[in-house]
Image 1 (cartoon, helix red, strand yellow):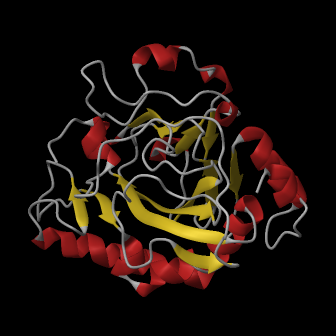
Image 2 (tube, rainbow, N blue to C red):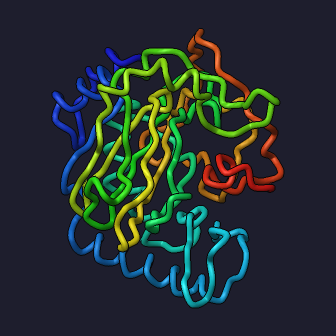
Length: 294
């Protein structure tokens, strides 16, 4: 479906003005979306996983750990695939967030993946400017990610930053000059961005961010001693079909979470960069941008 068709469908959660703003700018930040009791449960579950990581010495199928991680000072960069790690995460993904997704990709919604990223007041936790579409290309760009702030997130906490309307611009090459995938824009491409228009998406606990897979985004390193968790869920319209292997599939990948399956794929004529073959697995954007092995 195209934007005009989606906007004709009555909204489930978002005001019509927010839906229009999303298609115009490529992003939204909506305050206080997640109910307080659900948010409290999510924080408790997340804290339990951080404690569990103390017994893990290297990255595995659950945790992506920073090089300085230790039992005494756990530094989890990512909880992988939280949708299968605890039911609290999956209930959020199939609850109000799926309704939000339906307001923006159309009534037939597919769950793609989830991840829980942390910032730990560490210069290495900067996420460079990048776009998501090149990580998991689909036949069209009705693909978005909804981020949920589990704690209050201000300017010092490494919040998500976006370049408004960049979703209408080009998709950038996210390989380096040696044809190695790094998952971010080259310096020359960053210089071409309208950085003065950058929007910093801060919010209280329970607020959400939403960005199109074409929107250029990143996040600065945290300057706060308090860890900042950001739970991310990716959704697509049912008529957006993947044409590369899923980088980290779970039993929930490609589940219909609203509406029904599509009988016809919609093809956007704009081309998309092909990522490496991740059919054997994927670690995290932190590892890719830091050029860590694996």
